[in-house]
Length: 193
Image (cartoon, rainbow, N blue to C red; front, side, top):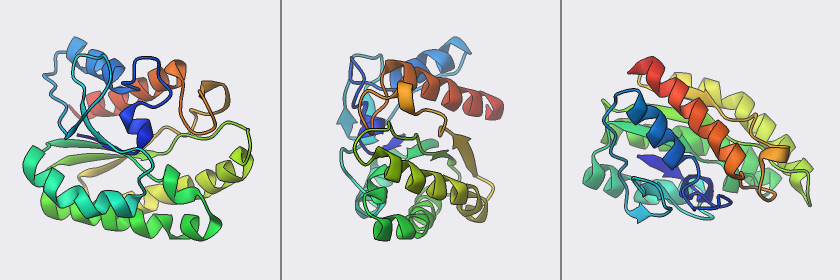
């Protein structure tokens, strides 16, 4: 289950599937059977299912997570969330606690699922991008501790190097950035499976 916000949905990519199509190819070429799950369907890739919701914060994702987990029953969850929690300094300060709650919900709903939690992608230096980048760096520094506290089924994937020229706009990767994301997700998954 690709889970998160508009970056998971694929905003900024030409075909609208972001990292998902590239990751699908990486995994299937390595011999894994892959079936992305979720209530959303975007992009021109081979498996368009996901739970990427544009503009959603981690709290809003958490409001729907129990239902999604119950319906889709994912064995693996790829979580890239937090970008929309960094809009203000006050919200950014609460982001690690929101992540911890989201991971707790996942561990209760799918206790045996392997969960890959991203250090989120960066920002382009446009508008308030520099300030948001500082918030993203601070958030990403705390992600490993939150993930470690969640248990042995939770793993960190560092996507924070996707930034600047990898961005289609201030917040969303371009196709090159999404290719880098797909490669990083794939490396993490193939190391486990």
